[in-house]
Length: 242
Image (cartoon, rainbow, N blue to C red; front, top):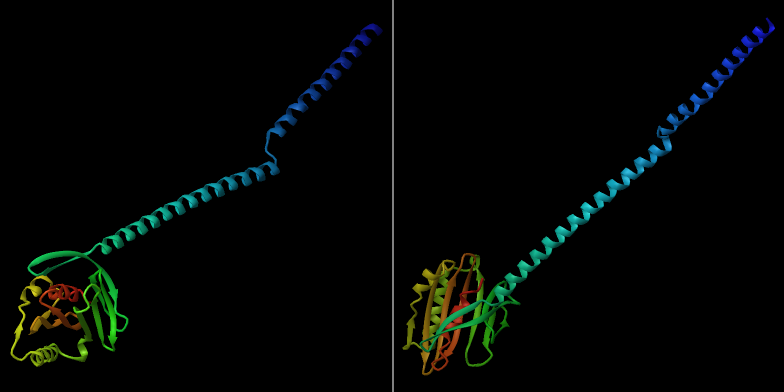
């Protein structure tokens, strides 16, 4: 009987021990599952890494945009430089002693009056007196052109025309003529009106030309001689005044 009791007791004790062992074995499984869940610190680190990546991508995009803007600016500067080069190579065609000539011109601005003029490279624009400039031929001081530019509200075209005609008549009363400048109005639409008069004194000649543009009047006084025959050259330069 005691043996039976001992056997039963042993079975009970063994069952209790096995139950305890099973409980210890399950606990680590729960712990491992808990470890697999991200902690708050890990979540913060992940968010910081994501923000860093986004900032880096934004910075790269900004750098790319800046590079594109620089390329556009450089392209614009190159285009502007090309245009300036083209303007520097502008030419002017004129007739002298029956022969056509084509030469490069440069642009000058009047120091005294608000206008610009394109003239041949070997000519110089200077201020002679208030309201009067001179375009000098560096190769021949006997040929030159006086330039007077006035606003339309200060005078009329007819007044300038009569003044020019009287001046020419006073220089050579018996040897004057009107210039035929009708083709200028056809070829240059920016010129609204133009008249010209010439006085001849032996081998020298004086020419007066009055030009009307949209916003101003120009009076040219050309001093030329038969040998040089640069009247048309001076006239073509004078027509560029604006």
